[in-house]
Amino acid sequence: MSEATRPTILVTGAAGNLGSEVVDRLLARGARVRRLVRRQAGARAGAEQVVGDLTDPQVVRAALVGVDAVLLVWPRLDAASAHGPVAELAAAAPRVVYVSSSAVDDQAVRQSDPIVQVHSDMEALLHDAGLRSVVLRSDTLASNARGWAAQLRAGDGVAGPDMARTAVVDERDVADAAVAVLLAGRGQPEHGPYVLTGPEVLSRADQVERLGVALRRRLRFEALPADLARSRMLADGRPERLVEALIAASARRPESDLITDHVERLTGHPAGTFAQWAVDHAVEFS
Image: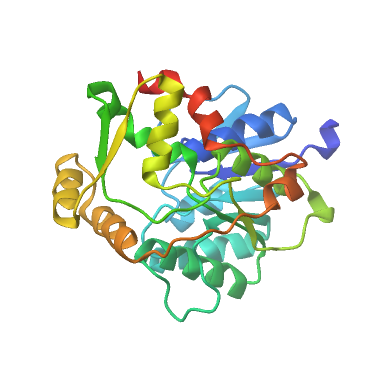
């Protein structure tokens, strides 16, 4: 990639599991990268850093100067505060890659739970603003399993709210897909939505079992009733609104047996398994 053709990419949520993978890949491909993070974090060599809240239009306006494309990961449980930032995106007119949810149902008047609803609302807001957005509807990220690390360091069980079975997808595959679209330029893929899944449908118990194989331990998953799951998550310090959204998702989100080839379509390689993700990240659980 020559200096003249190097695009400048803004990555929101750049300190998160997905955003950090995207930053690494963009830098490896020679792009100019600007990280938007909520609070001062360790600098990433080769990348600019903007500290501020994505919901603040002034922060977004400053972060967008000279930007060709944006990875948008919306951090809130409602889209009401997105109108100002989306207006800034529309004014700057970069290409936008929005990371949504595979659980969005285009035929539904209202979505199954608050988390899916905000993704649906954001998709509509971006569309109505006339942005050149590509929607990547991601299934459950494998990296969500990192939330079990403390329990697995303390014992051989994972307890929490049960969730619908889905085709859990490796966040590295989602990052590969996002980078492919971010760097596609004028020849970018159609706006989608692309539904990014892993190659097999898994329950929480299935994921814990595969982690056990990777760790060479006999692990178990205990599904907690809603009241107990709620009290434990609140005791762990999770925000009340997030806890209520997770409880609603565990109760209302339907199971899905959907498996797509969209990861391979965008990246040229098939989606990896959760079992391999567990092997690659085993050290984080021991």
